[in-house]
Image (cartoon, rainbow, N blue to C red; front, top):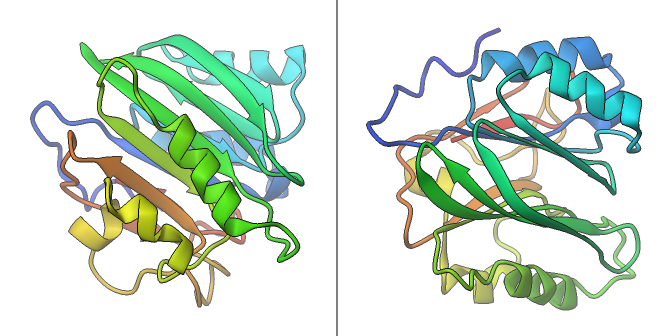
Length: 218
């Protein structure tokens, strides 16, 4: 399956893949192969395993020409360009986020990759506010905020975020916005939001057969 074909290349565009890879249950080689097919400039994986030098080397070898960051919390960031700075944040519960400043194709970007705890015990408002804080870009660079939020698209906790961000699929996708469970999607848990400095040109959700979450390409 090649899911990147429906999104045609855009001049001066940045291709982004956000994907919960279900702790690598399909095997890391298969996951890497599928991510390679996306031809994405920025790849953010969640539930991508514990950090180790061996696992980081795996991503570096598979994605030659990319900068690779594996800070913990099951997060992996692969960038076709430079990661100028990055900082890992352990939030409440098992929630985690990586904030990074990137240069991709000569463009400066600020990115937040997040995986939020699904437990109802944790304050979703607090978690969303934490992400908004991390999404602040002191340099004024456009911002991409993406990952598994474990909150449906109509969640009231997204209201403050909507004041500053546009949802990539709402803006440029077709069909129903739902990412889980992958084979019979019922709810949108995985999201890509962009600041007003970016315009979503295309968004595609695909059941890969490799995870219980659909892959989100924009």
